[in-house]
Length: 152
Image (cartoon, rainbow, N blue to C red):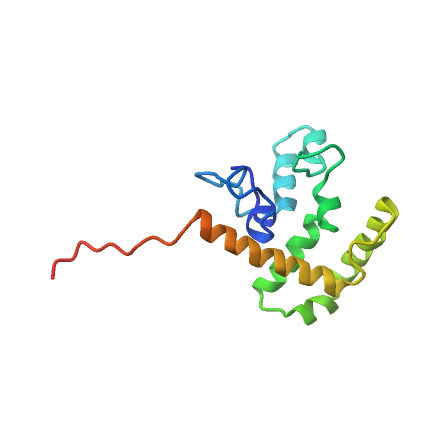
């Protein structure tokens, strides 16, 4: 598969039995940022490296437009959750606040409306999407029964 850590495992931004139905996920442990850095390092064309993420489901659609924030926000908030920070702590974090506020302003400038009005709403949305992603993973990778070859 081509899903990265932020899309597939961070917020589950994929179609359950569509582009999410893969046997192996070679870049699944890399954030979108690291995938771009790796692509640039490997010499891929800048048009590919800097391509705007889109599900390609309709003209003019983009992940940013749908989500209201980009994958840099997803990465930073997701890593904070992994490190045990709470929604309140992340909503006040000195790195997250300016990043999210810049994106809120940019979103309104580009689309004429705000999708979110606060950093707290964005942090909460990333967490909500992560919980949904975890549920999707349970469907795609259901638990397997324990099998033992031990004789009693």
